[in-house]
Image 1 (tube, rainbow, N blue to C red):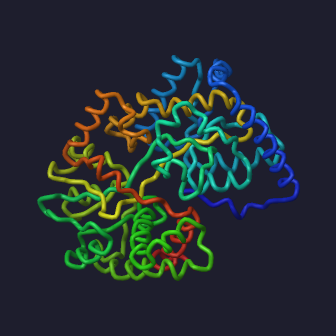
Image 2 (cartoon, rainbow, N blue to C red; image 1 turned 180 degrees about the horizontal axis):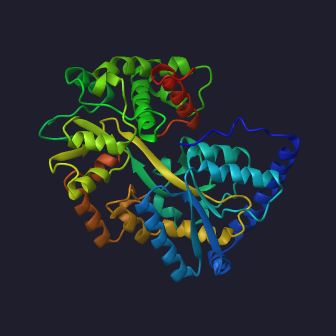
Image 3 (spheres, rainbow, N blue to C red; image 1 turned 135 degrees about the vertical axis):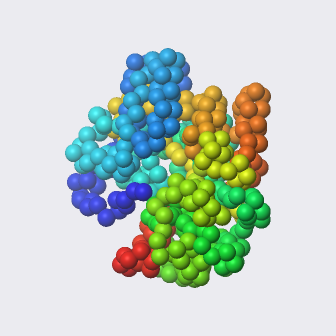
Length: 418
């Protein structure tokens, strides 16, 4: 979860600074786009990369330590993972540095930010770039065929961010208790009505709970308004929020009486959903990690009969990106680190780590034949989702929809105010 920074003051002095930052960035990006990769590798030697990234996942922290060791050995780059409790902290610090006129000595060289924060920083011209598509490994993501590699929560990246990992919403069920699970939002409503108490979702604004709202919003908008409605979700909501979201609130009003505890209490996270399914309190649950169920089955946390799947129309898929601040002191090393995150060996290592919520952003055929065999075998493990199912993806709405959905959900169901 992150906080919108749109309401922060923007004085004339800051506007002049932002314009200066933009000009500096434009000049830098022009010169670096002309720089041969060998020269960038040379510049990067001996540099440190302060990578500001969420630090709340032990498996991810361990993976980044492994990445740091590889960068040190191969490129003489010292990657320091600055663990953040909330990415917004790095964003507010960058804005403060810009306001103070700090254009060359920023605290971060590389940022892992979400679409909302990216949109804010891009609007303020506080990111270096465009650089991402000049990385040698960028071609491995096949962005021309996969537009999500150039979209961060519906905001065009335009070379200011490079993808590095991906995850996707999956649903899961015990195939003995529920042999034929619902495969659309409409079917879910029907099934829940016939099986009260066997489904629930985490309380927004928890990430997983909000993801469920967005999944339902996209499916219901497609059903009621078609492609023209889906196009509206790629833009910030204007005065159309009430109209477009109305089918979602009708759906939730109908669903809530059938939820676990009749929707009076909501779980707080995915771990509680998993435990409730394992305790046979729920028959259907969901996660934002295609590896989660297979890992839980292997650990014995879920029954071997648990199966995962993707809804018929697809499920929300979320690409994570890294960006370079306009005032990063070590831009060459930051680019080398971002390029290394796209190496097939790095993508493979993350993909076969059962504790990581990581799907590759590079395409399957870019892996070696032995790697492809291992990934295919992993997809056959109990509880796994096949790669062909994970090709059915839905694109995130514009980040402003997330804020409006959470605000409205809390007003209607969570004791908040409109």
